[in-house]
Image (cartoon, rainbow, N blue to C red; front, side):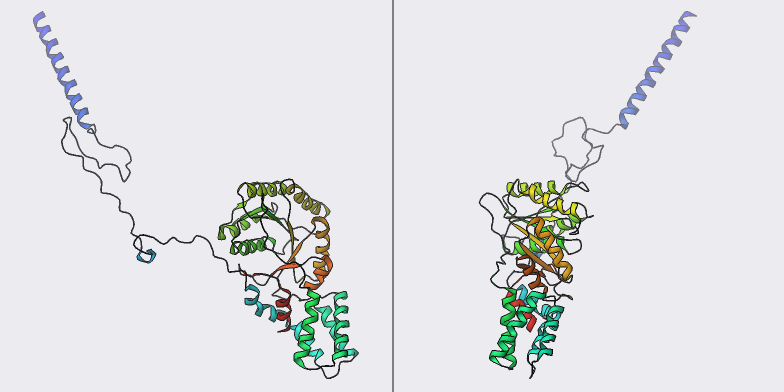
Length: 398
């Protein structure tokens, strides 16, 4: 009986061993073989191959190499060089812009020039005609004082010369208008870098006159003159103003310093922009500022603060006031207040191609004693031109 019990125990033990062994081999057979990737593969990883425990003398099969895209034939300049695409816009040259846009200026201001020529060419110029001439000049936003000066000068010349020849009348009027516009004013707007710091330009004005757009167009002008420019987005109140400025800069490869915080301190942003300009050794730093009504004392004081903070780091070499040429007398009031706060050194007149009256140029210069340096003559990116007194008068009289 004990022998039978022992035999049963031995048989059970043998069956158990056989079962364990079978289970072991079954699990082992399901494992991935050595050298096989079980995770995600990159295109340059070796292709999966089954291997055995025995060493192999054959190199593992590799994945087919990834082919590089062929360069289009149109891009090939020669056998050894490949044409590089220009990532930025190429602004139009500064010279000739006013000449190219002269037709627009002529069309928009025809009433002034043609009207005066018609009046002065009459066979008889009596007091009624002079009154009409005076009224024409006033309606053209020339201003009271300049209008009286021009009428007096024309009266004297007509009396002395007594000429009714159309060409002579044209030349006479041209000469007197050029005197009023004053070609002797310094209208240079291409600044020169200081020995140890960039030239700093501040751009100011009321809401809606196109300051940010004007700065973008100015950046294009300066890049066309081979200047290294940096922009400062100190208009931190208007939504997307910084992005708009940066977009203009990106088009011509000009960096923009801006804050990622809505409503950030504009003086701080301006200071950082000037600091970056010094560190990067750029030629010019242009600071955009928020539009503000000239009768808002707090906002105007803040504009003065921006200028003072910048001057802790560098001098503000130029303060350009952007004015809408269609605003007439209101534009003159704006100009006066801004000049008192930040010492305006130059004027940029926008929208001179629309319903603007040409006389506003003379009136503003007389009001501030500073020159009109740039004029906006359209909506295109390169429709900003340096102001030239003689070219302007010729456009009025054409």
